[in-house]
Each structure stands twice: as structure tokens, then as C-alpha cells.
Image (cartoon, rainbow, N blue to C red; front, side):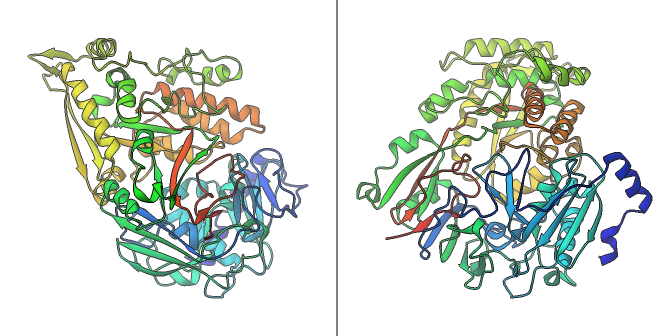
Length: 604
């Protein structure tokens, strides 16, 4: 790719965009940017509020992971990159504070500049910013990274790149991106794009998997690895960002290592044996009963519960609507009715975790379960009412069973819905008008032990309906290939959502994912209403309008009945070696991105 391609739109196109978007005058460079209002921290802040600026440096942390890896490039669709490779070695122009809904502060960039309409964003690089080989981070690296990721990188980068009208160098260390559409999140999205070293990729195929470690500007470099088995990161002693206030109290370990094991059961047994130093437990029943091994009893391993204020996201079994049997919303509702969530939750989790009632449960972004839309939310939905499914406007609530194993009411409701959709029971088998049986496969990955247990109970519950289900467990590589190409009927699905959802929602729910491989739209939903609500979210000028648009989207998603929802946890449960420590002040996102290993430290 040539440098000239960065200013690739004709002047007529840009002029039209500027007429559409309005003037960009009156902006001033700032040390940070927030999605709404101003960032909470002043320019001279000491450290992020949840980092300990006096944390000691040194020591190491070891993680245990299930699966493996076959590439060092996490920025393309092919291959499976190891944990930590982007987080620890690659920097972005801006960095996120996880104690605010969505605020960014300068990292590679010393300042960010945009106008009130956010028709453009301009970044000025820090003169001291360097890659691990000592070469400076340049505007050319920024421009090359943005275009490369946006055109031939992972599909998650493509949507934002298509909204850029022009990209140009405006000074020795400054770069400006002008937009061709209204999207107030774009300055923040570009601020979080990975900045790669252009020179490393000269003459190489960026889209090919490779075991060449990236040359980044982050705090760590890859010191050693064994493909698919282990990778070790070493703190760069000459890291340029060591004294940056954004990073004060962060990246405290000298060494970070990830060891890979066959499945989740083996991972836990390795942790009990002391082979690595920290473990996240997702099952509250296991948390209560399985942590009586010697190192816990002696105090060498500590148990911690980390609360958070982030949305639940969605977790459950997703139905692929590209499959004819799941194209009808009534069939999908029947599958939800037949899922005995209360019984399964009690059996596997001790009934501790609350049920997911919406994609944004546990936050003000979630629509109230079963309540009709009112006010501005109703107005937004009325504009797309012709493409709404029942429940979006009137209110949708996930069905609640009586908690008994039989779930008779749920099965009766499922039977009625299936009959309405054209399925009838014949000689013990559910068939359609053509006599084809209702049979499908639940696809799971090795190590998803809880999901496998849930699938086994669910399979038994569907037998009285005449539905035949086969559960297939495959390895990580096969799972990635099949989900990338949407080659499944039903599978385990999880989408973590933030307090400031934005452009990624198009990747999750956009209609392009119906046919385009590699998106996160595993259910294959094609909803003009959802896409309109995403546009409303991205163009919202204040938080109130943003909340209304998100609640409207939430109603469309949950009433779409694409996922059989499980439950969520309001805390993260972590067991860790006693030498590992974290600050008393927790971010609002809790144990999420930016927490471990970033603000943890080692101390005897």
C-alpha cells in the first residue's frame, strides 16, 4: 500500500461530507476525551484512581489457559493468538480508564482534538513514544495501522474504517481523520486502535498466520514461547511509557507467563498443584465446595470476590436463525420455554446467580423486564415498529419456571408454540408439514464443562417434546472454524457488554453478519430495527438520549429470542497466590479489562 492512499477520497466526496457534517471550528487539543461530557481526571492526574502509584515492581504472575495458540498475530481472522499478546506488547493512541463509563486519556498521543459535532479527530504523538526496538512511533505507523486493520485485518476493524473520509498527516507528529458519517464514538474508537510498526511488515503478508512476535510499543516483549503450550512476556527495561501518569502503578510484574492445558478440568487441577498463580472461578457452587485444598487451608492461596457495576451481557445457548428450524421466533420462544433455568441454576450453581433478563441487566441501559416501552424509548421503537417482534414494544420477560425438574408449564407453553409454528408430534417425534423431524446439534468446545452439563440436562428436557438433540464437543481450532463460518445449529455463546456500547454493536448484531464470515452475529439476526437503534446510539449527543436508544436496542435483542439466556454474576471470584496483591479501590468495571494483570503486583 502506498502513502498516497491515506488521502484517498476525492475532494468532491470530502466537500459533500463537510456540508453534511458542518463546520469543525472551535476545537482545542485536550489530554483526554469522554463519550459524553468531560473526562473525570485533570491533565496532571497522578495515576488512574484504581491503580496504586506506590506499587512495588518485580516478580511474576502465571496464568493457566485452556486450549492453545497457532499464531502471534491477533489482528487477523485466521489463527488463534496467545493470551496477552496484544494487551502486553501493543499500545494505542489513547488508554481507557475503567473507573468511568467511557473516558480515554493520552498514551501514544499526548493530545486529542475534535469539534463539537465530532466530524474529525486529530492526534498529536508524544515525541518520546518508541517501539521496543528503539525506533520512534511515527504518523506513518499510525496511518498504516489504521488502513491495514480497516481493510485486511479482522472484520471488527472494518466498520470504523468505512466511516473515514480522509486520513492525513497535519504536522511532524500529528494526524487527522475526517469522517463521512455522524458517529460520535469514532474519535474514541480510533484512539483505541492498535498501533503497529509499519517497517516490521514490509514485504510480508499481514493476513497470514505467523509465529513472528509483533514489535510493539507496549511494556512487555515476548521473551520465549512454545507453540500452543506456553508464552512468556518480559518487562521492557527501556519502555518509554514507564513514567507516564496513565501507567503509574500499572504493569508491575517483571514477567508474565501463560501456560496452556487441554481443558478446564486440567487447568483447575494444575492450579491446585501450584503450577500457576491465579484462577477465576465461574461457578459459585464450586467456589463454595472445591476450594478446600491444602494451599487454601494454609493461606498460601487466597480467595477474593471482586464486585462490579457493568452490564450482564448475554450468555447462553444461541440459535442459528440461518437454520430453517430456528428462523421462526415462535420456535425460538419454545426453546426458551423448555429450558428449565431455575432447576439447572439450582443444580449447578446452588441458585446463587440471578437470571439474565436482558442484554444489559445490572445497569440503567437494560430495559425493565415485562414493562411496556414509554416516553422516548417508545418513540424510537415506533419509528421501526413494522420490523419489531412481539414483546419489543409491549414488554418481554424471560419465562420463569417453578424450579421443579418436570417444568410442566414450560413444556405446555413450548408445545403450543411449536404447534402454532407448524410442528406436530407424530409417533413420539416432532415433525413439520413435510414430515421432517425436529433434530439439531448443540456444538460445544472442549473445556466448557458447565455448558456441557447444562446441555445434557436440556437435552433430556426436550425429549418429551419429541425433539432429538445431539451434543458434539470439539477442540478449539475446530470451534473457531465452525463459528467463523456459522456452521452450527446451537452453541454456547457469550457477549460481554460495557457501560458505553457503540460501534461494536454493529459487529454483534449487524445484518452483514448474516452472510459475511467472522462477525460476532452468530445468531444471524437481520433486524433493520436494531441497526436503526445502533445509529441512534452513535449519534446521541447526551447520556439521556444514549440510554433511551440502548434500552430500545435491548428490547429488540431480547424479544428477538435469539439466545436462551443463562445467568450472570455480580462478582468475580478469584483465587490467587498470597504474594499477589491488588488495590483496595476497585474500578466500576471490577475484574474486567484493565484489572489483572495491569494493576496487580507481587510482594512477599
